[in-house]
Length: 210
Image (tube, rainbow, N blue to C red):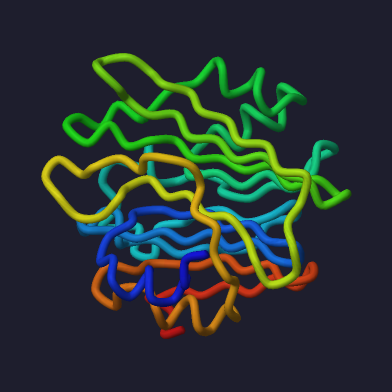
């Protein structure tokens, strides 16, 4: 099992990440450019959305403004892009993601990562990434997990140019408290964190002094 806090402290740029456990879900975003860093999470009726902190500095919103979390009849949907809406509208996690692919942000071709957490504790994780110029769609199904543990995927393995996509199976991790996760993220690159622990949601935003 991977020590999650150590992993985060030693990885300056995992990009965007999703961690799912028995009683909690975490989603964080990081940024290297001014446009990516100019964001906060704010609550909506069915989840959260990203919003520009300073509207005057917003450049291209197409890949950075979206609803990362929505609750639907399927369960809780968590993603790093507008595929959240694709999954909700399709009513099927896999069928929806078969219509999507990685982001068109050459040269990084950022993977799309997604999770669906069902009310019975089972969940699915997915990553859509570019391999040899084509889209590789990977799906991982979990019947659940033990107390205190979870599974994690991110967009990137770490820093680089171009950024290296996450590879392999989701990491099995321990799941510390939200404040510990926020503190472990790289202070220069972290932007926001969504934490849902036993249904209680906390939002952390660097621009708001969290």
